[in-house]
Figure (cartoon, rainbow, N blue to C red):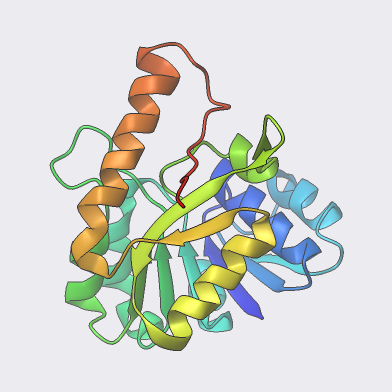
Length: 203
């Protein structure tokens, strides 16, 4: 699968390299696509990773992961909305302390044909790098579109090594965002640290 990742920080790079090792082809989008900064991504990407300008990266993949600062989402979709039309877009961004943590509002307003998901926002990147804690597989709670798009996103979560737990369509986005708030409250407020995750238990 061809996957575009906008952002080369900890979240984007960790997920991109996991997907590359699973056999997907990754094109990272960055404002400054050349230079030594991105060389480590290319070196460990098993030949399945490239870095390109944002417009080129967006055009590459049927799936686009947004792994940029939350405040950058609105200007991004204002500039590149036409190129994002019809794609599966995974919003992994956060605006901590804002009324709306996610970027789904501006995305859906500018790109109404996109199939949107909220995922990979509620855990620290370390848990994507190593998706097991205490011998247990970490669960990733997510919400979004249905049908084949949901199946695609679930398969990408599995490829990272996480167990996908779908909690419903985008009316459930506040639930996912509240998990992010819970993670921050425990990891930092209560001092548990970043290697903290969630597990659903059911009979």
